[in-house]
Length: 298
Image 1 (cartoon, one colour):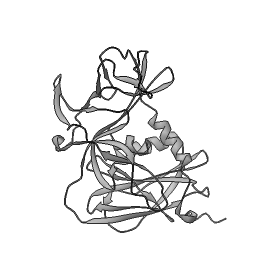
Image 2: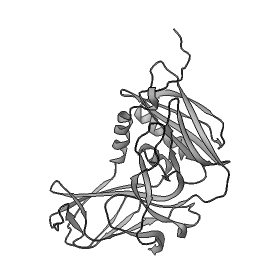
Image 3: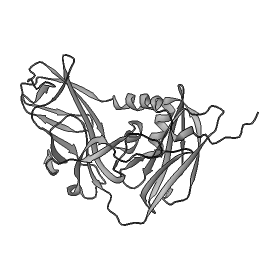
Image 4: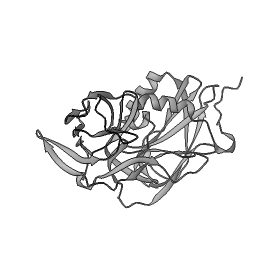
């Protein structure tokens, strides 16, 4: 029996995404749920320090009627590269790299009805160490990329918000980035990567270290020295990303699934360049995958 790893390709340059979508959605759903009285002004604090100041009468149903019954508000906070990866997120805006100072997701419901905001909510995100120029941060909201290639279809992307500028704020001796939001959505407090460098296209092929072929794979380009992760585009024989600054330390992390079996692989930290990269994937449990992603990308 031939036990040599073989490269796996997908006809037509497309691949299933449902298996990993379930994995990513499961991790996106891990957050906090608060139950609040919408008729009263409320301040909430997330596990990672995000503060939400919600004015009275700030919710309405999708028909525009005010809501007076208790509201369930879900908060998801994402500050690190491992959290971005296991949530299946990218930190780009139409293929321009963003350096994230913090991301969050909000949704609300009452008596089984989805809600929207009737008044802006004030958000304070704790200022992380390593954010070089917090005053350069801008507010982005979750949307759909207009760039689609290699049969990848639509994918999540960040859109520059037209709302008010982010301000630096001090509360209780701690520094926060403050901004208002007018809708329940994904939000990212971030800035464009502006360092002048030549640009290259990165490509990666993967091999299966076992006889079990992966049915669904995602590839993430992870930068070592700043807080950004790029979800790469799938192609006929692997994954690609273009317009990548040359000479930055980065690695690629692959996550795959075949049925219920997870697979994972990584490249070593190396300076970005246009040479092709090959990664061997190995079977692992979900717990091992999460632990490896944390170890490889923190």
